[in-house]
Length: 308
Image 1: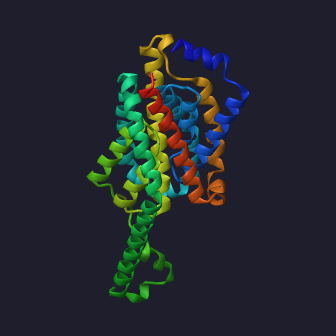
Image 2: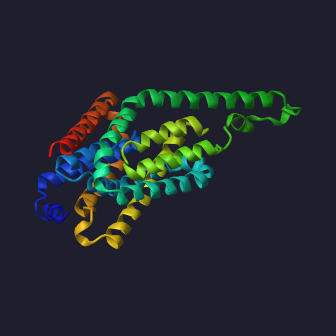
Image 3: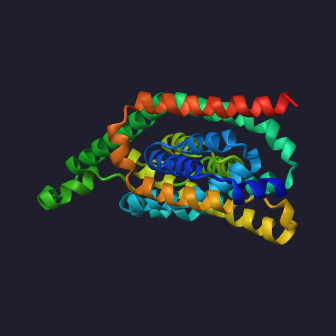
């Protein structure tokens, strides 16, 4: 670990810093629009020789700023379903604590063996994302259609039609405030564990969960997703800092603050321009690049695992 610290304090070139910055901007942008931004920054760090645990921890901490920027951009949608956050945010926090605890307490060798599997799982989410999004949109449209039909039916059957003026029409088709089932809470909790441990593609995972189990439209689900990802990453970051500076010796610390700061700046900018970037990049090209970078990280980690 001391050699790693020396490397980042003395040998991190301007070109490497710029590459990390660009990766952070990109990750912040696609985290806001789609998710899986970690599969941009994580491979870059691994390719530079950063150990997997240090790469995961530093990357997760750096992306927090972009996570909250993205959530701020969806603040209107989040306010529309704020009642669900009372149950979902605590579930995410608890899951994030457990995931972060697993990451920082288990031997680094275990993460080195599990991370390639998690990368494959994350890439699977990225590849399946178009079908997943289509499924989520179809369910949201069906819910809104059912709510509108129910409202129209109720209005038609009222005994006082004269009082059902134009001002009441929007209320008839307005969906009721979403409710939180036990299944949704448990799945969000599980996603928090995954996010606290590995970070990558938790946004896509959450979109699938919320799209199926939360009775809200896709924009509201995306807003809740951005907030929950931010909460998980912040919770995990607090755990990382506590362990690094309270329980570890100076030579054993894994947080690389130079990387955290550069990714934080990049992800903040990326979060602000996420929608602009997302609308101008072909989804297919974006997905292909993410998968390519993920495969690079997978190759590097497998090489380090099996080639002594």
